[in-house]
Amino acid sequence: MGFPEYRPRRMRRNENLRRMIRETSLGVDDLVYPLFVVHGRSVREEISSMPGQYRFSVDRLGDEARIIKEHGIPAVLLFGVPGRKDPLGSEAYAEDGIVQRAVREIKAAVPELLVITDVCLCEYTDHGHCGKIEGGEVDNDSTLELLALTAVSQARAGSDMVAPSDMMDGRVGAIRQALDREGFKQIGILSYAAKYCSTFYGPFREAAESAPRFGDRKAYQMDPPNWREALREVELDIREGADMVMVKPALPYLDVICRVKEEFEFPLAAYQVSGEYAMLRAAAHLKWLDGERAMLETLTCIKRAGADVIITYFALAAARLLGQQ
Ligand code: PBG
Picture 1 (cartoon, helix red, strand yellow):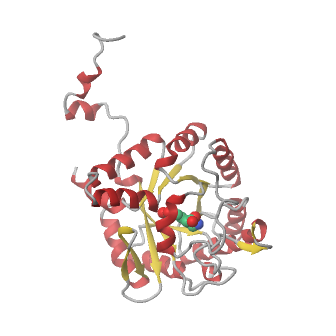
Picture 2 (cartoon, helix red, strand yellow):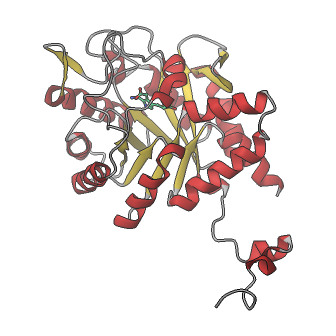
Picture 3 (cartoon, rainbow, N blue to C red):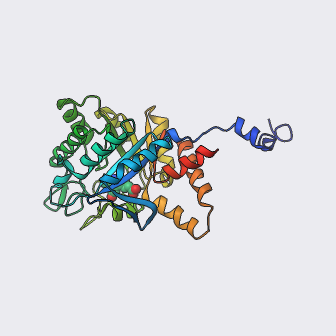
């Protein structure tokens, strides 16, 4: 088969032909919307490096959750900014911690909206690292206990699924065991299995006040040049009991998404992170790109690469556009 018998352009001549042979479709069902929660009352403050994204106080979450649900988005992912930071990040696993209160509020307002909670310590520790510091390093095994405590306390508050993003070894198993022991066998784990040490987390760290005070995260998050290692990370997490695995960031790591999907027939999420959002918003603001089209194109491409679920700050904006089509 070749030219002139086969002319690929014939099937691109109009929108109905293109619709019929389209291989990937992006839908609102695929989206998860991340939310930042802060202490205080009536707070809805815009994050300067993430225009259109806000930090909400707990009392503003009910309204936001209703809007999210009305747009058909199935789930939110919660991040908390604590009132007080300490070396062990104790607000992460406090019963009245910011995320625990946020979960209760959302579940009371919109019970059917799925609530996923990020499990990590970096927002809660005074040093800004994702675990307990011992001898100047993040100690893996003693951090596991704190992560398990965090997951259990989030489950107790009503979280539907916990999402560990710390990148400690063995944390999925430790969290699974703790949840089962405490009677939360039905609570799922979305593991940030292949989370790279990426500069694209910059705006998030402003929003969540979670930048490390010394050093960096290279000793626990993955090295960007590696993809084989990502397959090993995913395999470990599936064996330890993850219900869904994640690749993060998304757009610069489409090859990793694709390889993970090919290797493991397993539910896969991709996180279009804060820096990806900031980059697209900045270019759109300068009128260097058509913002809406760039948004839908990137989301569709992340889906095409193999993601079943996309965590994105564009979730609401995309849902509005998809609803009009
Ligand atoms: C916490 C965490 C981070 C992100 C999600 N969970 C930041 C980091 O690892 O430094 C990044 C999300 C984003 O950039 O949108 N460990």
